[in-house]
Amino acid sequence: MFTNKKFFFFSLFLLLGTLFSINLFAAGSTVIASETESVVTPSIYMLLPFVILLILIATGPLFYKHFWERHYPKISILLGLVTVVYYVYFLKDYHSVIHIFIEYVSFIALLSSLFVASGGILIKIDREATPIANILFLLFGAVIANVIGTTGASMLLIRPFIKMNKDRIKPYHIIFFIFLVSNVGGALTPIGDPPLFIGFLRGVPFLWVIENVWYIWIPTLLIILLVFYIIDKNNHSKLETTEAVEYSGKIEFKGVKNLIYLVVIIVAVFIDPGIMSWVPSLKPLPFGIREIIMFGVVFLSYNKAHPDILKANEFDFEPIKEVAYLFVGIFLTMIPALQLIAIFSQQNHDMLHATSFYWATGILSSALDNTPTYLNFLSAAMGKFYLDVNVKSQVIEFIFKDDIFLRAISVSAVFFGAMTYIGNGPNFMVKSISERAGIEMPSFFAYLIKYAIPILIPIYTIIWLIYFS
Image 1 (tube, rainbow, N blue to C red):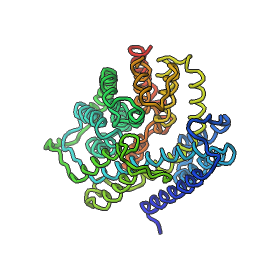
Image 2: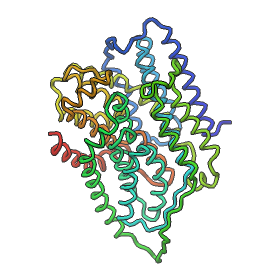
Image 3: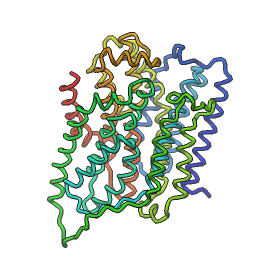
Image 4: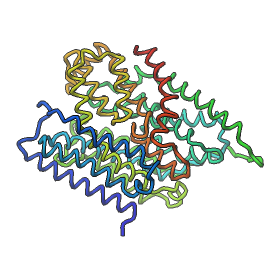
């Protein structure tokens, strides 16, 4: 009988086996398209699986929760397979499927390794969760997101943040955590968020982001923190305590050895043939040495973690299992959407300006994976100067011509990831962990309508008016 952990790993290895089979088949096929060949335009009707999946994610937990919790893995995989069958058997396009599969494996390797490694770290903060204390906590999380990534910072800090606020925890606490730690905070370095890392792989200098985004990042962060402070201060003032609670002010940290695992994961991010020429490629395997290291960290960090720490963190594999199943469907069904966007932006790059890139990249990063969205619009922006995104020297040339386009794309891809639960990988994991801690999180639409649009859109509009209009 499978436990959740065994079921997750069984499904994972089954998926990798499927990827390997498709990759081997495609490698020996004469019909596989190369990256330089024209891509067949998918039918607009193939957007339906993606739209259906988004609707189900939004409505399932709200209207048919029991059915959704039992069957969401099957639904996600089934809708993803509809897209796979269309591309493999009708378009004869194996490359697009393999490419997105490889991106998914990298995505889930990073998230699962950070999730498990951080699960073996216990942070206890014995002090009152005043509005100022919460602001300092969120600010710290936003800053370190640039060092260990938004996923690493989210997985490391969400549990202690919940426990620190246990006497007055509300959904808005978690939502602002997602805004600041899981998204906006990681806008300063390529390590911070995957879109910026893909830009680094394509030739954007490592320090370019912090040099060109810090003056946008700071006011955005401060405004969101100010809004949080106003809401949190109001909530704190209504708190009724029957007896005085004494706090020692101490911060307890256990599981120091897992910090080594986090360092290994961050170093592994750079172990890529595109960065280090000596790193061998493992093709036709749908993963590389980087992913092997990350999955190795999953195994070691879980089996070597102290049981008392895992118990105190209420650690289980359910959150990463939910992300793994839902995002395999999201990654597959979004292939037609991304290709249609790429085709449109390439054909109409002369009509696109800084405002267009800012809002288009942002809005689509809210619903699609923000990494390929970033890459598609970067390619379109470079097309304005007849440059190729696949040539590193031309990426540098593009930056020197006019870097406002890259700045607009970089900022919006990261910032707008906070607009929905699926805008960025850690969002869904934070939501899942919070719900398992007993917090009643808003539905997909409630998150968007009640929090993201009224809070973030005015702030992002101000950023646009000042820097990109």
